[in-house]
Image (cartoon, rainbow, N blue to C red):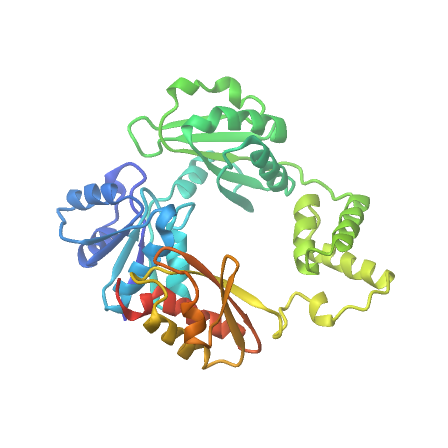
Length: 383
């Protein structure tokens, strides 16, 4: 069986490329890369050429996943690499791994450099438990909300930030996290490597924005966990129940994030309030498990060259007929019965468009997985 190798590449110093990573890149006929240009430079460093290079950017991650699945289906090993470090950590590689995993292909990590692990190793800050935030939101409002929610746990935090946004992020860090320690790791393993230790409150004063360059990882020390306000928890639960927009499990997750109280504890409060109000709800809705009869949906990319043409429609109809459920396809305001070829052909779904598959019945999830495989495999047309 062909394998997707998730290969960690240097975050700066090319000497950090492991012998195993070099061997896998040498032996794999296909390389899926966040940046084809950077991949060519790395391969040239190893004296390699003639690889099938798949562009795997955020904007085309679904198409990239389809091409990777095509290569694996043809028996070709694929090496997945990011611009720097370990794929899947705040880069488009996660989407590829997810799609490959759904279809049961073999996935193997080739361990190595990671900005996250490298920064933690030199920060000298309590590491466990910690929360990895990925890249901080670009807008101040969203950034503050994330920092407030993550900071409420009291755990250490790790985040990535772009140099042109660090000055603004530093202001928000000071306002939200105050005197908590922060270690700024810049250009790790590179010629101009820099490690700055200060507090969130003082970080902005230590920065020279015009001189900031390169990749930046922030390690923020632990703080005091916020104790949940029982009145606030009850108020948010009651508001959520009154709105009726979220299921109990989703409401519990939302309130837990806003207050710092454990999700299970919030869930029990929701049940208690519902009992108090003597609301006669279906037991399947109260619990987190999804009912067999509840409608489920999956967003699918039409990546084959001719869109949803007759052969593709026939394969869709054949696939859904194998499962005990009803399936419809939706695009905008258009709807099609997935068990009817003519109905499917009524959808305006050319290459590059998206359709939503909705399934209801005991085997709804299995039907959606089958459709996911069909669409990702380009209906066997290879383009």
